[in-house]
Image (cartoon, rainbow, N blue to C red; front, side, top):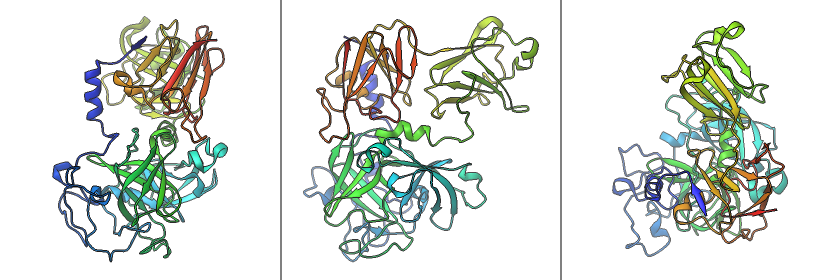
Length: 494
């Protein structure tokens, strides 16, 4: 039996269909595919001519490509693509010296962990003489354990916003979003990189210009990698860390170029597997860390003061009188929630925040900005309480951190997430387990691992976890093998 805190399945399916990251190949917008630098003004450039290809007219793998290459004399990428001067959204893709990287926020770029050592200082250089910015290479924690075969992800953290760096011309520059959906076999994708190139292989050294090639996905190992295979296009040395792109009304990073097999096999790590970890490591470096207070109030409108506390404040009086109607930002640690009230003694609730489901989050919690809301400078009392569940109906509960904060509660096993539960396939970032029970998370349906040996079952209990109370324990899956990889679940009494 299941209980789901979610809209009717029809509404859920509708929402998924209009999501920005399709789990299948999207239809061409306006009857045609855009170029990587397309601004809607020109559909023809150099030796490339565009056409619409549908499943009814395509008879080869190449026919499914987003555009044709009518001439064989073009320089190859990554050995089979086109050299061009980037403009528009793909100016966010640059190099880090021997590898490629993509700007994914104003504070970070995404690349491959094998490109540099953990903690190394790297220079991220943008195209078109836009300049460069230094950052620190941060590996996914499991890369150090399993190496590149499974978690070849790295975030390059900047010490400040790239938009405020004096060495960068950031006018019109915009980070690219990352996909939180898995792709499917035969989906159309774009390989992109600053690496070696050649007519039939990787014979030429990098020349500082990016190259791209449209190909199809030949293989999708949901929790491990994407494989592209096309005789005329593949990755070369130096393309590592670059994006595997999809297009759905905008360019989206669906994978990170990682390695090559027997030519022309090219492999990328899927971004959705590590999407929560990537997001919590690409935010503002000035976000609070492991604060003493479980909740912190900020006065950004006046002098930047803060009030760090544990527990509840029924009214701002005495030493705290300054804070009456003065809160413009709220920090909440993971495992806690904060409720703001318009009146003293918790009257007239304004808003409630928790440490998991915000937009400006890191590994410690989330910061909420009130300055542009109707709740700015109105709080006269506040509660800071544990956000851990109590006597839940379900013995095990899954949570989706960066989605809508929804949950799925179960008293038994789930052999696959299908039908109205399909939203939860590869979507769990936290797990609640009641005392006396154990949850086993599997990366494949039917209570199986994925057969590669790189993704295995993960067990979590109700007595020991990241945050525990008298009812059970909440487990943070971000940065673990279970982050966004659960496709079946056992929930049983100890």
